[in-house]
Length: 289
Image (cartoon, rainbow, N blue to C red; front, side, top):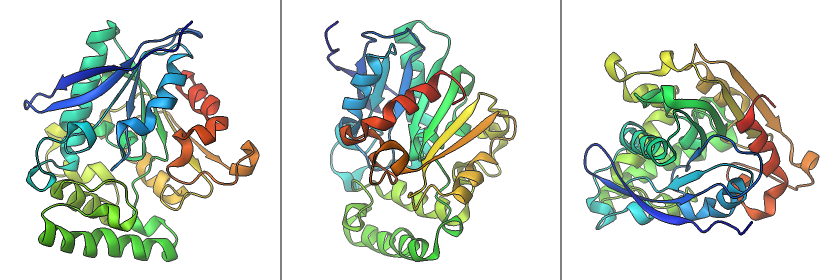
């Protein structure tokens, strides 16, 4: 069977904001549920296309997209983008999930979220349509759960230097600090605030129980994180898992050497150089590993 060609798609959120994504139809393997592949903060969808193509060959329809204010979904100038991190969950993930359900005619999909992409299901009113969540490097990014020698410069960047950059430039200059693409000001501010507070997306809905679905999320959750990841550590992963008390949860901590790799870290899971990890990730989508 020929390799599927990513189909460019436009998805309109409930508030009218259009998102750009790519849909890859299943092209082989054992048929499985569709997969919504949600990116990490500051990472464009094109980073995931090689993995998405491989996953489609394993039997899954796959949708990957850019959040508002990122990559192909950025409209106009970055400094004029009013997006917030909360909207990435409450609007963007909600809309992409609904789109994938409608496109495939299925009642449920699998959510594979990279870092922030796997951390916001508690903001989704349509979370019951997620059959299983697999978080790759997913955690709260809580500074107190990291090694001090990493946490201190991370706090300095996100809570001091980036806010200063917002005042000067009108957007979050996160690229200058090795934190992915530059971000809309509202996204960058919330990112620092949530990492400082712990509990991640629970901070977006504190005092607003009608928008808080963390305690209602009951789908199985599996988080894969690397032993050499300075962000998704045992403590920050546990901090995320505690926000979903009703879910069946599993955590797997992988060592690079066990998979013939020199390192994994926070980002490299989806690189072609790390294809040794892809079967583990796909297996997690199908059930407990």
